[in-house]
Amino acid sequence: RSGAPDGSRPGQVWVVTYEPTHHDMLDDEATAYHEGIPGHHMQVSIAQELPNRHPFHLSIFYNAYLEGWALYAERLGKEVGFYQDPASDLGRLQSELFRAIRLVVDSGVRYKHWTRQQMADYFQQHLGDTPQAEIDRYIVLPGQALGYKIGQLKILELRKRRTGRTGSRFDIRAFHDEILNAGALPLDLLDARVTAWIASRKAAQAKRHVNRLPMRDSLQSRDRNVISSRRD
Image 1: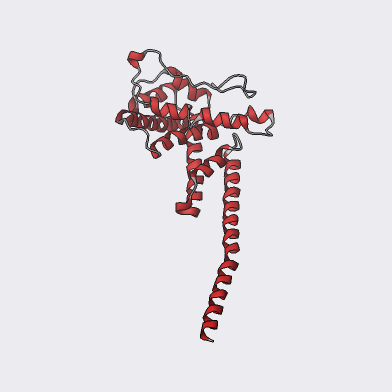
Image 2: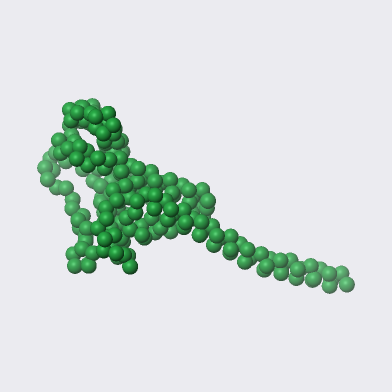
């Protein structure tokens, strides 16, 4: 639950506790990163605190951006060394499988005109019993499941683009700031924003390199003068 934009109500992350005998908790750690920190809770809180944003922008929901970041957050947990419990790591992989199945089901019902039963059968074949509400979700929300993965892949693409230009000098914190510090954006605008940022960083680095050249030339000139005077 997002906090109130005016700060009157803090954000909350709710933990599922119903039917504990039927809840295996394997994906709880992945869900914590997805819904909590560095996922939606941090993402939305940063967006609400950005200055000079029109109230209309605060109410916009771009599924691919919001959910793409949350999937990226799950993966980030693995990169920084979390999921130490093998069961939690299995839960992370199970969540990845679940998202892959949803891509097929979401595409199947739209493009191939699958019936409700075909959707249920695909879930049953690859994941086991699935609540009917989960199937209803993809019927009434076209493309939502696709948006999750498309958004994550876009963020990873932009990160790779930046990493390729900087190599070991890549500052992942600065990259994350650039992703989050404009609030929710359509992916084409996010791409344009990060592309412009990469270009500005590249120009700044080139400028610093040029500024160092006169000093180097001056030192070389001084060394030549010293050598010449010693010869005299």
